[in-house]
Image (cartoon, rainbow, N blue to C red; front, side, top):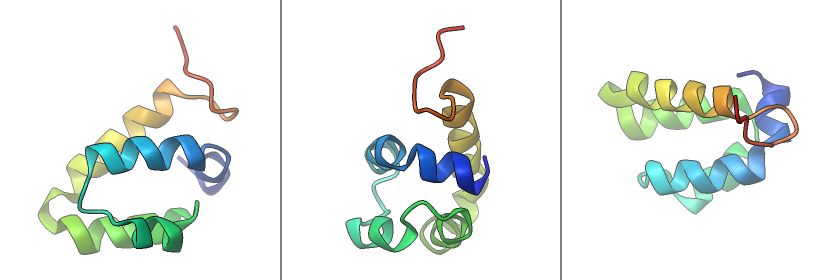
Length: 74
C-alpha cells in the first residue's frame, strides 16, 4: 500500500478498518485522513504488540481492492 492507494480508497477502507480494529477512534480516522505515515503511527499507538497483525490485514485488504476502490474478483 502506498499513499495514493490509501487516499484513493480512504472512504471504503476506513469503514472496514474501524469495524475490524475498533481501538481506532473516529478522531484517529479524522487525523489519519488517508495518510500512510499517520495510519502507521496510530497503529503503533493503539495496537503496539499487535501492529504486525494489523499491517497484514491492511495488506490483504489492498490486495483485494484496486486503486479505484473496486473489489477484485480474481
